Every structure is written in C-alpha cells, then in structure tokens.
Image 1 (cartoon, rainbow, N blue to C red):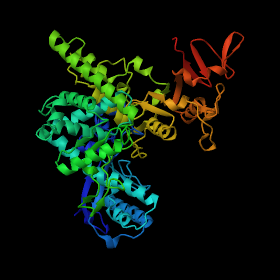
Image 2 (cartoon, rainbow, N blue to C red):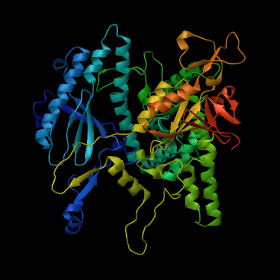
Image 3 (cartoon, helix red, strand yellow):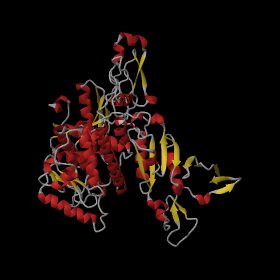
Length: 599
C-alpha cells in the first residue's frame, strides 16, 4: 500500500489523479526530461577524452507534471479551521516527502543526492524530481471543501477560495478524465488538439483562449458522429457524420466548427459521455437566452458548456454539492472570462482564412500533382504576415536571448518548412533531424545563458528551476494591470514580439472623476462639460517600458492616435515631441519608436 511505504502518513491514499495536459495526451510537447548530471557522453571513451565538461539546463521553460493525491475520507483526522487545514496539508506533504526520501533515495531540504536533485516542499504543493522529470504533487482538498460548504455565513474570501479549489482540483480532474478518454478512443484527437494549439500560438493568441476550451472543441468534433441522431443539423455543418480519421481532417473540422457555430445565438454543448438529459439541454438553452438578453451581448462570448458545468452537481468522491456558481445557472467553467468578444471574433476570422487556405492548397495540389511548394503552402497558416502585424497599435520586441525555440516564432521566415521533416545528410546515412526533435532538444537544454557546465570529476549540482518563462509572466502582469486599456497578444512558444491593441474607449474623452483619474490627462482642445480628460497612453507605454526594461529591447508605435500631435512643434526645421527631435520616417518618444503611416 502506498501510504504504508511512505512511512508515517496518517491516512490511506485512495488514488493519484493526473491534472497535467501531457498525461491526457493534449500538450503540444511531451514532458521533457532534464539531462542527467552524469551525461551519457562520459561513458564513451572517445568523447570522454575530448570533453572535460558537459552542459546541462539551469532553467527550463516547461512546467512540472501536475498530479494530485486523493486520501480516503476521514473527517476526524482533519482540523475544523480553514487556516489550520492549510497547515495540515503542508505537514502532510512534508511527511510524504520524508517517505519518498527513504523510498526513492532522494533528498529533502539542503542535502543533495548523486543526481543533484531535490524535493521542494511548499504550503500548496511539492516538486518531486525523478529520472529527469519533475512531478508537482498537491493534495485534493476534499475535507477543505466540505468545511467551506458547511459555513453558515461564508465571506467573499471563503466563496472565492471554494470556487478556485473546485475548478483547480475537482472540475479539472473530471475534465482530465473526459479528455483522456477521448484521446484514448480516437488517436487522431490528440494530434488535432496539438495542431490547434500550434495554430493558436502562431497567431499570437496565447493565453487568450484556454487550453481546456480547445480540448472541448476537439472533443465535440470527434463525438459529433455519435450525436447524429440527436442533432443532425450540427453534423451537416461540420462536414459529415464520419469521425475524423487523421489529424489533418480533425484540424479542418475544428476550424470549420469554430467558424460555423453561431456563438451569439447558440450555446455549444459538449457531452461526450452522455451525462446530460433532454431536460438539461432545454434548461441550458433557456438560461442562455436569458443571459444573452434582447441585445444578444450578455454572458460569456464563447458559451461552451460541458457536463462538468452542471449546477448543484453531486460529486460522489467529494460527497458534497459542487455548484458552478452561487445560483442554479449553467455557466461555462473555462470560458467564463476568456475569450472576450473581440478575441473570439479575431479567432473566428483567422479560422475562416486558414480553412479556406487549406482547402485551396489541397485542391491545387491534387490538380497539379506536384509537390513543389506544397509544404510551404501548408505551413503558411502557422505564420503571421506583415499586414497582420500592422493591425496592432504597438509592438514590443523581446530580447532574443529569452527565446528558447526560434523555429516556433510567428514571424519565422528563414525556416519555411518548419513543420516538415528534413534530412541533414542524405548520403551519409544520418538520422532524420526533424523540427520536433530540434524543439525537444532546445527545451531540454533551456536558455543558453543559464546552462551549467558539469565536469566528470564533480558530482551533483544545483536544483533546476522549472516553468521559467519571464515573457509569459510579464504579459500576464500586463493583462492584469492594463486590461481596461488594451489587449495583449503574443506567442508563448517563441515570444519574440508582443502586440498591443488599444481598446476603443482609450481615445474617447471622458468626464473627470477623482476615483478614475489614473492614467488620465486633460483634453487640450474641444472641451465639453462631460469630456474633460482622455486616457494618457504615453504614460501607460512608459510604465510598460519600465516594467519590461530587462525583457524588451524595442518598442514601435503603429497607431498614431497614441501620439499627441498637438504637442509637436517645429524647432530649427525639425519636428519635436516632448523636446525630442525626430525625423519624418520614425518618431522617437522617450525611447519609443513611432512608425509613420506614410511608410
């Protein structure tokens, strides 16, 4: 029994549940093992004579493999206070780490083993490295949720904690089981999800549409054939009742579903395991109409409903009522806040163009029967062109040293066949070196400037930092801080460019209020009683540049509305902005480059 082998753990372990996308075959790249601190190359006599040291990763951009432990229900062994419950979980994780120290011959704390790995224990989780992989282990908070459920007058903090725990541990576990079953039953579903992720990242929509939403859309594509008798209209929309047999066919169906579904007037119900009854479906449609309202602009823009969103759903393992909201209303779990209306419209338009391009390319290849530039034509949908970049208001260029895999860049032009297999040496009999293998090697080595040298006569080393993505954290902070002023786009796989799109209300004059005076400046001309201030976009850009001073190397403004032309005055025949001389082609404002429309 696992609990007995771990030593003095007071409760029995009922199950270990996976939460990571890689464990349900949905991650774009499989888990990347870290190179061993005793490299294989040292075992070779020839290589050992030539190399005195070997490089390994110091930081990795990949996230650990997230799993959770579910203990048998035993209320008497848990405290009755929420804060004490968190301390008890931390103590339980420490005991499990001590047991793993004995069982797996690893270490806890400052001591290191021969492989140089450590078990890191935090109040919320513990990271367990094993054979180059890192597992992030957390405890399923069943007793904590029961305690929050029984509160007579819960506070806002208690309700928010309950919502976060439900989504992170309970609903995510159910979603993981459902998607794992879909990907196991339909092998092409996993590859379709990965293609959809690659397409989404390539068009700089990372973080704007959740991965779980993509998984549910792909699940809908692969289960439409089973729903033919109940909903024939949807079957005709996405191209027939046959289940896709390949990743290419599944990806086409995914794009077509994203384009053809009426997101304004119809909810998208995903129920691959047939848990919803006819009454549930009718209730979803009626509540959807109520949320949309007469103007059809209420509720989440992408109303994506699954069986896990059922209000007052009873979890047998939790033995408490799991509510999606405080009321008995069907609401999406993963698309409640994202994507917003503008992002969804952009994704639909990109999907339409990508689908038309793929169909046209396929038909032209069948007619010509030539493979000339066929590969490049298919890869074109995974790149951004120059005209699409002109649609952003501001472009931020990140430091190239922070890019682990440049082949995944949205603006990649040097490697047109970035998705195809190439043979570096056809006559020498060398192995095929694919872009996928190159990406895996780069992810395993991490950032070049953070790589460590390992020597043959030195054992062990420092712990490796997982999930180190400074550009991702930077963009998340910008979205949280300036979400009311702009929308931020970037490619998480290769974040070399960050696109900023101002919201329409930014350049609209508003009435003055001391409560909303942040990032505001007076209107210079056309004063009115209700329009005295306007958003100070220069101040926002200045803060963004300060926050990203170690990450951003160049800022380019493409929207002239953010430049106050009324401040431009002639001085010695040259234009000046805030006392800085500029030329006709580009204008520099406090270190910011402005692209003129005439160029």
